[in-house]
Image (cartoon, rainbow, N blue to C red; front, side, top):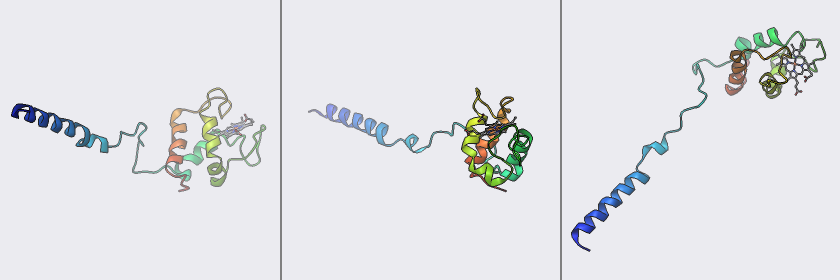
Length: 122
Ligand code: HEC
């Protein structure tokens, strides 16, 4: 092997090494596809969720329940314990809650964010 070949081989090795193992890109997490619109303020039941439920659900899921609703949603624990069923029905376009039609996405996103923020009461 002549000197030219050795230098060439070394140069290729350095290039390959740089490409495969010296890249900081691998260490940077992908950007959050659904970023929290306001990461400094957490969504809470008292501040955000209770009024959405009162305005859109309580006429049936009240205490007492009405119009055949199977449970009431008037306390923090009753809403928290059913958050997955609530999310699946408020986002279900063919069988939504409330039955009259889907709420605006802002309301639905708030309830999703409430769950993501840890289901805080206040
Ligand atoms: C007009 C009355 C009415 C309103 C308003 C209403 N619901 Fe309901 N809800 C019902 C009835 C009746 C059922 C039982 C039949 C069914 O599941 O569709 C039900 C069932 C549910 C269920 C049970 C789903 C399951 O899989 O067991 C959830 C969760 C729910 N409602 C959440 C909500 C939420 C959250 C709201 C407000 C955003 C709401 N509902 C508004 C009448 C209502």
